[in-house]
Length: 162
Image 1 (cartoon, helix red, strand yellow):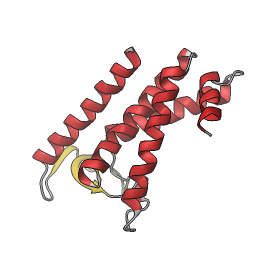
Image 2: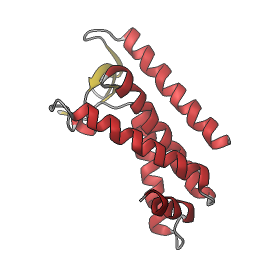
Image 3: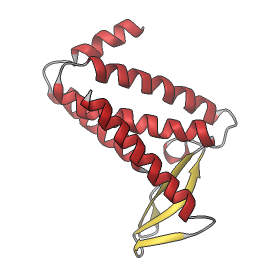
């Protein structure tokens, strides 16, 4: 139950920050955190990472459906998994997937606001939900690659869902 509470807290934090960004950063307003490196900006992404599928009319619908399915699978895995070290990455991945899913359902886009510049290269703008997804995926992958055991509940659930 504690893991679901953490998921909810991360989703609430994500949604509060996004709402603050939508309210405070209108138009082309930008907040400089570290000049020539880190900025807060309000961007709407109708696609996925690096605006994948943003230029096709059905992209947001496909991403919404896929995010919904992924969110359900992640929550089922989180609730049934017995191995404790998989709970942290699944918690992060669930919160990230659901946080961005909420945006896709409410606004037909995802609110991004963290903007980093590395010289002339501008890294794609992202948000807290994206951070949760990336860190959770990296941790989950690391645990899968370094553990001699597979996460039994995830394996059972994948067999059950197929």
